[in-house]
Length: 267
Image 1: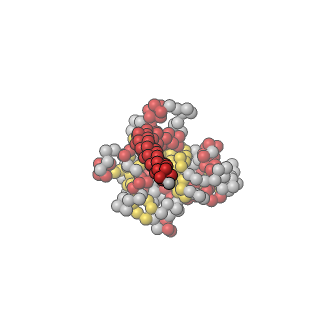
Image 2 (image 1 turned 30 degrees about the horizontal axis):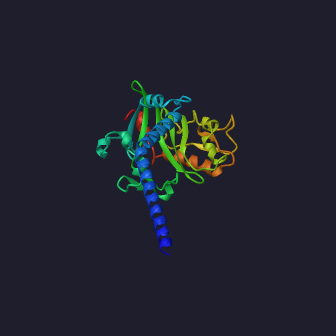
Image 3 (image 1 turned 90 degrees about the vertical axis):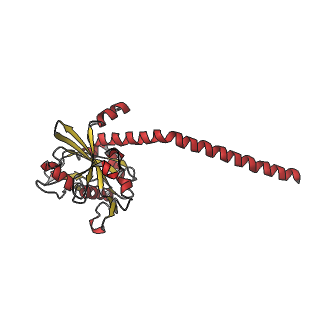
């Protein structure tokens, strides 16, 4: 009996020792790799911003991505007023340090959206957003804006790029979503994303977004075709989600106040 008890005790001790050793190894690896993971996430985000703006070369190296992204001026914008916010007023060293999605979970830096106004289905919205501005001299040539909204199965996160007129679409891309592969997942299809380029968000002198995704496609002679994009085949709810997302973020609760001031030269 003594030998059996001793064997059980040894087995338990060995198991505990292995658990402790494995825990130490995993914890050490997590701490050691954390900076590299953060760097890779940031690089991926910069790649997606460049892609939306049509500026990401195929097979670009990390150095090339950093070089191209460095041309952008990163700003914080009040979604209510459309005015720029000094990062230091938020206790931040610079605008890149701001996390809009983290802020949306902070009651002091965000607000609930009334259901009647929540076209994008996001429920809460940060008061301040990060924007990416590209200039040639004093002239704004591209504006990249973060957007997100609910599709069929998931919240879709991406970037919309506009030309310097703050109205014409330069590109739209998503970096995170859980839509159905082969259906709603076609929002990642380069051919579909190409359809957005050159579309107009607003009518002249208006801040009411007009984007519509059309089931069956947009004909060559379609009325107001400058505001219309082909819907995703077999993905009606995802298409509707994309349409609602774009119109929400380009509307008065989103970037419309900022874009209006940008067009008029007030910011």
